[in-house]
Figure 1 (spheres, rainbow, N blue to C red):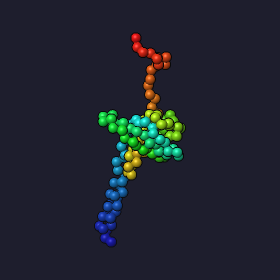
Figure 2: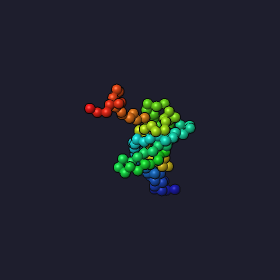
Figure 3: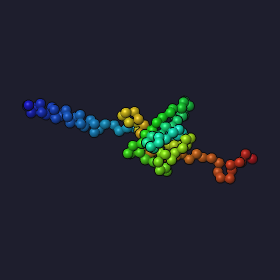
Length: 120
């Protein structure tokens, strides 16, 4: 094999390899949703997300992986149906929604002692 042919092959391999190194990282997305169900093994979560502009409800499944983080909860299994969660996630190349951070949302209500206040 000539030196030129060897150089072409090495250059091509280098370009293919470096294109994978510089691939764009997945885009982080954030939403708040209502918990519907948590998998028995705690590896995934099904939730309803209401789009704020259209009002349309989307049923979404989010998956845990080794990079997933929990904020204020020990496990997905500690979540209950109806709770609101805030989820930071990325879409995997296979189209799965992978949790990067999840936390329960504390819903505001009246200040303590004013639960039965009906106005002036």
